[in-house]
Image 1 (cartoon, rainbow, N blue to C red):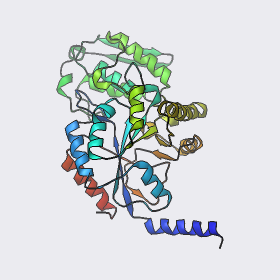
Image 2: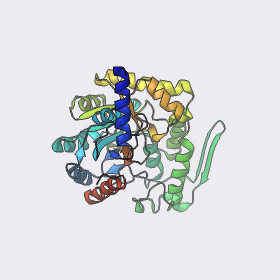
Image 3: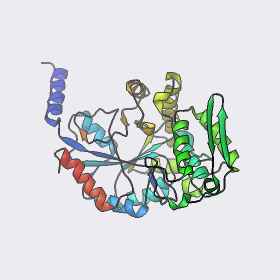
Image 4: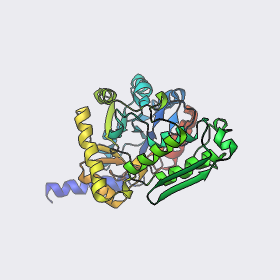
Length: 346
């Protein structure tokens, strides 16, 4: 047998030996902060994050590129835990980075290039600012752009914001406790699949209706160029791409989709002066065509939001991740044990 043939057989044997054996988990964080409203559960408090890192010190905390290399060899490291962050909030630098460095735990930070040095918040945060803060609102909302229409009458309590701040623990997948919470989720659903420019135009209309100006709250600040470059200089940090405008990629035509992928990689590499080979699908949204486009754009690994443990069979361009909520260290430890025990690791 030729040498290449022997190598192929060896890789196949490694995969067969590793099949069904868990190779660890990838954790998905977004924010390290304490927020007044957090409808998608994106924030983990700094105190809890410090507890999480103490837990990870008792596990095999690994960098994503190292795990990807092991998976490529068909021998995923058993029990490995990988830390990743999506989107590019400034608290990743201000709060998470010092704690990661203190514990010497590596992480991959997936940055949305269009949000770097941005002057306004992500659209889902802007929507929450309008509806989930207690400021007064007019009695009738009508948003209209072409054939896109949303209408909602507000009662006196909804206009005044009565009860809005009393539901800080509400999450968007739960029953809405007030009219404003219901409006938030309905509008999020309606705005989610729209093209970036059209969505931003509707948000401009919503802000005008509410008597508000676009701005960046200190609590929702996104990374600056200098902070992105600071992250890239840290030996513990890998910079990954997360598109330009954070769209659900399967809703885009192929030209727009490819532009989001290729531009995010090119611009990010110019910004941080490092190769960018890892990618995370916004909202986890992907299909077969999207995966092929990610490969064609030059990425060698990509993360989804599918909650599963890694194994030798994990595809490098559809890596699963578990989203981490604002759990205590003890709860994260219990969940890690459950995930790993279920796959024969613990």
